[in-house]
Structure formats: structure tokens, C-alpha cells
Image (tube, rainbow, N blue to C red; front, side):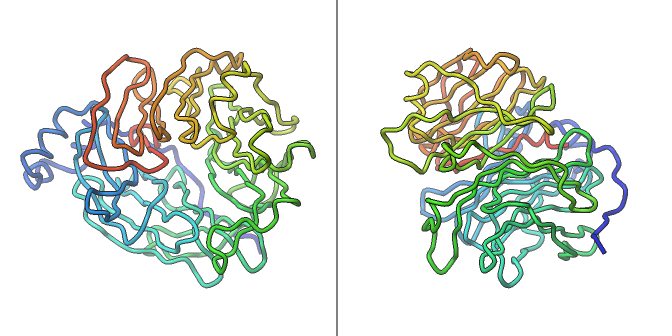
Length: 377
């Protein structure tokens, strides 16, 4: 029988004030003076994996100004973060091909539980909660069968793994819940990897990237769209959803560096994948690699980053026209912030892209992604 989760209810949004109301005044008393001050100044909270100055790994909760509220230690490099606004708990996933995920309290940074992928699986670094917070979904690799899966975890049962869905593809990376609360959209990168070979790509000549829409209750495939054969080496890893419920994607090209394939486009269930035309100079500046994709809070704009090209672009969602260009050394992390976007870099910068703010610099090296906790519901 297909796995059927319980019915969903609408999630809630979280800003600093709601976070405080949920955590209680006792939370503030536990903070160091520096952390309490950072929390008090914050308009919003964000989570991102990082590397500390001593070389150890962690995940930090921080403000739009880069002030650190809390950190949790990780045994190795993390990737992305999921947040449940119902329980106010977060999960940071390991970068592939690692097998850990850490459940933690973003208020205090306390580790609450360590999850380990089951035998024959490893995490792909991304996941999300159901709207009612009852279930955690994680993208995983069934590496011996060379297929992607979405693992399903029961939160109330201590994050017990209770099933999995076929992702209907390989190299299942980022997955999001569509606004209907019922459909999962997945970026299947199409690259075969196996932990016995580290991060080596084993099937470049036969890659088959896709965007799949999956019923989150039954695991049934709703729709699946492939790239043209001429672009089969364009791995699709990262996605975001705009106001029109289109799923924007960014590609990472595994072909010759002299090629200039389109890198950014969008998917809609029942329609072929569409690409956005970019001026050649802007396309070249992306270095054939998109590291993160985000949409603004109103869904009217899309931001993409290339840490390879040290470039971030902001596009108008309805037209694909480029509205802003930003040069950021090793810049990758993106999240909605106010009316614009927050960006982070591997050099420790935190930047409000469209507010002409001077970057603030943390004593951290930020990893690839940022989660806006107040938009995670």
C-alpha cells in the first residue's frame, strides 16, 4: 500500500516577535549578552551551514545584519536547513554523501537529536516539513539502485523513518512543497554517484535531469519534465517557486567550459520546461554554474547565484529580464529578505542585495544555502 501521511493544516509564519512569544522570556535569559543583543536587533532570522575559523563545522542562526543568535556544531560539512514553524525546530542536513542530519533548537543552538540515514542511503542535503509539522521529508540517494528517493520521517515518533517515495529520477537534490500543500516538486540532477567513489560523477554521457511533481500523500508521479537531449548534461539541482506557482530552476553544466548553455528557466506542471534568455555577457558571468535560486517574498522576482562566476542576478519573474547584477566573491547563499534578498558568501559576507548595504562579515565561512525562518511556513 502507498504511504499516506495524515491530513495537513496551514503552517504559520515566524518573525522575531513570534519566535520570542513561542520561546518565552526564559529563552532570552539564557542568551549571552551578545546573542541577546543580536536577537533584539533582528527583524528576521536566517539559518545556514558554515565553517568556523578553527575549521570545525556548524549551522548558525543569524539576523539580516549578520549578527549571530545561536550556533549548533556539526560532525562534518552541512548543506541546507529545514524549519518547522509549528514546533520551532530546525534540521540541518549533511552535504552528500554524508549520512547525518541534526535536529536542533534554533533559539539556543541545542542539539536535540541526530538522525542517521538508513543503510543504502545518504542525504542529498535538502528537506522540508509538512504544513502541520507532522512529517519531515528528505532527499536521499538509493545509491546501489542509482535512484533518488524522498525519505519520510514521523516527527512525533522521534523522527522515525516511516517510508520513502521514489523521486522518479536520479541525483534528487532540492525538493519543495508547492503552495497547494499537496504536491512535492523535485529537482532531479541526473548524475549517478556512489559513496564508494566519493563525489565522482559516474554517468555524464547518459545524464537525464528532470523536474518531477509528486503527490506527497501517495508518492504518485503527477508530472515529469525533461530537458532537451542537447542539454542532457545540464544538471538541475536548485529550485524556487514564484507568485504564479512556476518552479524556477538553475543548472550546473557538466559539459565543456567553452559551451554556453542556458542556465535558468522555469517549470509548470503539464507544460514543457522553459528557459530565460540572457545577454551573453551575463550568461558568461555565471560560469555555467548556478549554486542557489530564491524568489522574493511577493514572488515577483527571482535571484540566482554563481559562486564560480562570483555573480548574483535578480530577474523579473514575469519576463525574465535582469533587474540587478551583483559581484560577490564566492557568493552563493540566497533567501528572501524584506522586499529584496539576503546573500552570503564563502568569505563570510552577509549582504542585503537590493538595499545597497555594505556587507557585514562574520568570522565564518558560509556554505551554499540560506533558509529564511520567517518564510519557511
